[in-house]
Image 1: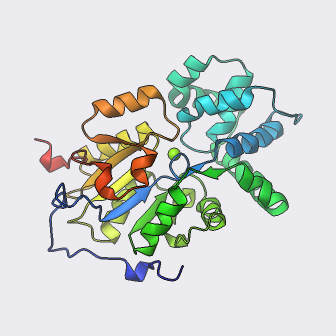
Image 2 (image 1 turned 90 degrees about the horizontal axis):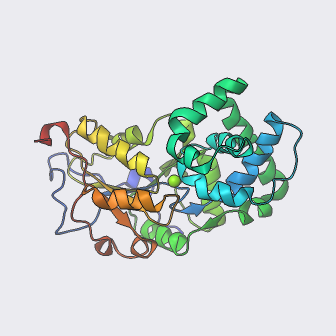
Image 3 (image 1 turned 45 degrees about the vertical axis):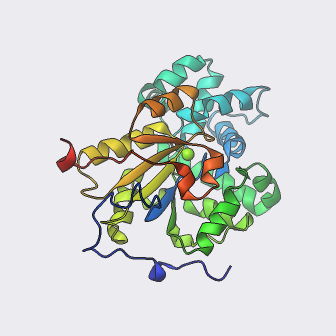
Amino acid sequence: MSNSYSEAEMPRDDAEGKKGGESSPESPTPGLLALDFDGVICDSVYEGFLSAWKVYGQLWPPPSPPPPGLAETFRRLRPVIETGWEFVILLRLLQEGVPEEEITARFQEEWCPRILERYGLDAADIGKRLDRVRDERITTDLGGWLANQRFYPGVADRLCQLLQQGFPLFILTTKEARFARKLLEQHGVPFPPSQVLGKEQEQPKTVLLRHLGERYRLSGREIWFVEDRLKTLQRVLEAGKEGLYGDMSIRLFLADWGYNTPADREAARQNPEIQVLSLSQFGQDFSAWRVERCKPRSKNSRN
Ligand SMILES: [Mg+2]
């Protein structure tokens, strides 16, 4: 596709132009759309499971085939995961027989640090092992690697449409950007590589969103952010309330087709600053997203 935009062609808002939030609800179109990757664009849970199981076999040898049923339990618990290395910790907890309810309740806060400490593991090292496993698989069996991951129905077409229109589109992911780029390429989505921001940025999504706003001078236009992890959206809200975004306005959407639980979706529905978005809405024009609320308030607008 020849008319996808480059960074140099990015639409830039006039710094003297509209102030944050003025683009809605009359013209419900974002100035920039930021998307999470896993659980929004791509269902990669099985690939994550298989790669993590290989790393598990390295850390707790000998390697063996995964026990029956483990993949299904892993998928159920996928919503607790924020970053790829945690897949391996989740597998360890399941193999140790820690109950699912316990993992759901205290995975990030308690179990991850506890397992790292107990076995003298390093999160960065586990992450590198996972990336190595993926690289090896891509080299030796690209077809198999791709077959274990799928794009959600209609998503590739919608991304292509937006890129064709020259719409400012970014991906924020906790995985290495090169893996997301590879998947986009294989699914025929001509996503500009520089607009896929991954783990290598070494910044949380809260900060990446601010950088996007600053870099593209979106002082008067809204960023819309679609993410499937409720806690990540809650962090953006908190950061907004602490003033991270100044007058920049961000609308938050929880992708209900991704890795979240009914309780997450219910909590999002109860939060006037987060909108639950369906896959069907995502595939339609922005006017179908029915946005009439949910921007992180800046420090100055708290009252
Ligand atoms: Mg996600």
